[in-house]
Length: 617
Image 1: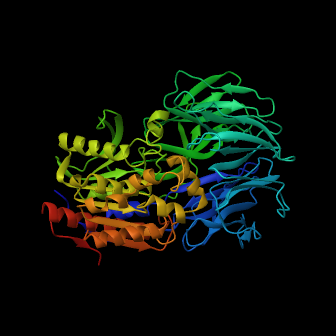
Image 2: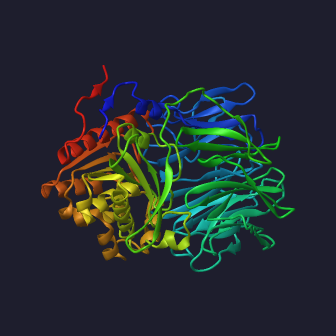
Image 3: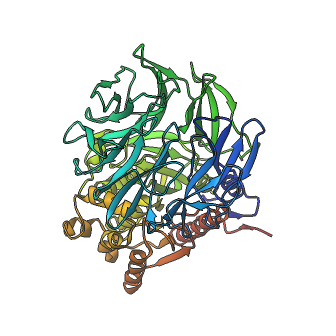
């Protein structure tokens, strides 16, 4: 039975949303300076942090928020993509560490999408990708002039980079041109001459995930990982000499990738995710020895890496607390201290547990389950993550806890297409999106019912981005399973989406389908939720961003119109942002919309929840 709907101002679920995340990235040459990204004031913005004084200075004031940035090697500048209302298209800008007006770095370029900017360790050069309808343009500028690029190339396939050697002598670009799927091969270029000097790929059915160059002066070693074995394993490659060293250990499980080099180039910090569970290792290169770090259950993410005093700085979150920067003992991983602690505590949350079941064809599927107090069966939320090349892990998720507070069970599955379960599992969906994933979802629902967890007539589907797409797809393909669906920034029509989306995502879509909508029309038709609009039976709520260039507005408006023509129940709420909101209060409003929607649908289905509702005064 559901608990009363709590909409009071101090509701615990709202407090969790307002508990800030904070991330800290130190400047390579001046570790006393760091870039901080946080939503501590209710909207994601960038801050400068001075370690010796703990001073935190807000640098960006964008009304839509700023979620990502890069600090220069010398700590003098903060770089970020200044876009239009969260649409992720604009120009890179830089703002002084001390604060001030932002300066456009590329005033002569047309607006572009980009998800990558970097400086070399010496600070001599800066590189970034700029993506438009013509392709992935890679630029390298020599500082401080920034008036004309010293290197440029264009790729038509999905590409990433450039990654720069310590003094920008070599640039590595990761591209899907050779692989033909959403996997990278590496190309190394001489920056001065522009010549291709080396390539790294392990052949068909494999890919290389780029890591980074050593930061030690004159060191041309590059670390990355290859999945030629079926799982990612780390490697060190020197593109000048051609020397390659594959790092092996009997400890490795699942995907193991490179996070950071130590400043002296003697060690690597390695990150492992196996079946959605995390671990960290330190690899001593000279001794060829892998040493595990002891971590509590949760989700580590990249931070500043090795420090001069022997510690390792990472970010960490779990189902009990949001992301915060931590310093670990470099020998055993023991917690030394919180790098930045805002002193904010959050209400106690329900723990998640890992479960496993068989899909309809017997494929093993892992999922995360959390249940409210009391005995089941419960009204249940079935969630799917975005991506699809991502994975749900034991992370901080205030939206999940909001459901649990109100008496719902929360179930989030790692469907086929998810990472960390092997190459075959990840690529099983290639060219046939939305088919196996829906089977995995349906099998999860059957398991929940058989285990006495889910109330059969009170199961709702939700998810964002690709998870929102799977919500629409599941409601159309398996309509008998659902009391309702709630999709956030979703995909409804792959063909229309391709026409309108940013160039970064077009390359990704081509790699997933094996071609454009014109080249693969039937695959795009079968994968599109609008194809199954007539079969939808349950009411649907959609939350969509007006400025979203990943899942653009037009395709959702067409889908909404089609469902209305068919007499289906659909509510679409548009918000003024891009691919999700960076505003905490807007996220709370969206969660409230979903809670109200879910309560209505279950009331209509079973009439089983209490009707007294606490409201804000």
